[in-house]
Image 1 (cartoon, rainbow, N blue to C red):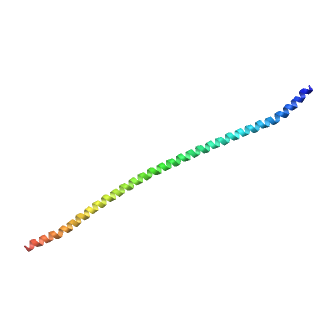
Image 2 (image 1 turned 180 degrees about the vertical axis):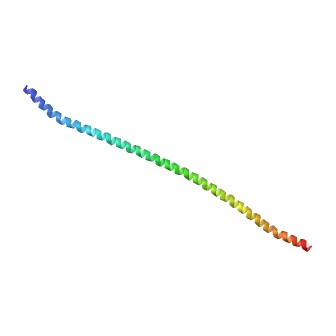
Image 3 (image 1 turned 180 degrees about the horizontal axis):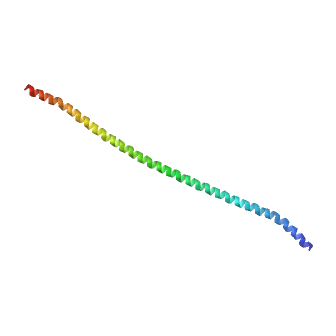
Length: 112
């Protein structure tokens, strides 16, 4: 009986620190799980931000292409207008050049 009563306190002495170690281990595991979850969330957030930035850059590139296309169309229209205006000026200059000839011809006819 005395041996039995000596075993119980020994079990309590051993079980106390073991229970503490188990509790500390569980807390450490939970902390590791929480840290891992936070890291996963941060990585997912970083991926989403990168995807958003990529979408913004792609949209910016498409906008640049559309703007460049619009500018090209405007420049083409300006070039066509310049050709038309140049053609009109050429026609006016030709008419001005022809007019003295006609006047001279008329004067010649009058003189004759």
